[in-house]
Image (tube, rainbow, N blue to C red; front, side, top):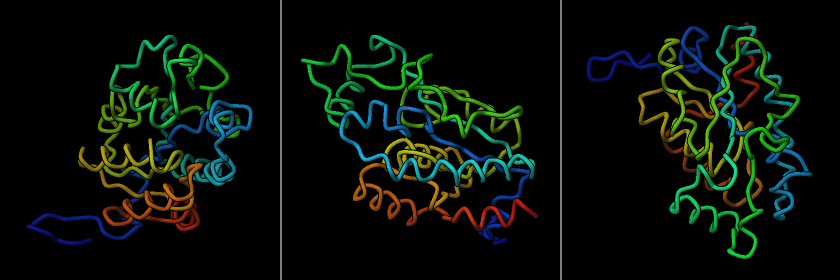
Length: 222
């Protein structure tokens, strides 16, 4: 614990992720970004790194529940026919996912109610978990995530999931701006692009606490 400007500030990992005030955020671990049959694989993405974090996140979630840590699944669940896509958001998609006018009618991912938007079976929400559906990158934009966390007295979010340089990074930045302590699960965030993943980790490491799953488990398993 530090004292800065007369205020008590959590500084040690055990203080930061105390189950009494911590939530585990699992970002976008749906079928589409984690399976070889989904949209991103069909776009040419190598999903190996994302698939590799499924099991570690599952173990982390199990330990979190036993310790009394709130588990929140941020689920990408877009509406069909572009109903949740503004022109500006479609421009972002055209850059990030190579949307084109020729194929845009059938070019989308994680449509609400489809297999692609369902949370990976290994990470299926359990009783007591919260599912927050989202249509943009951040788990805090257009969702009730902030209300749920504040209503539960949450001060710290431990962030895991995909993609490290997209939805994870956006969520981390928004959580910080909303005055949550942020701990990034360094080895339980991933993305298909290795260079962008490394860049995202570098950015997050420069501003936020980082912790490996093993260190989180040691504390929560106590």
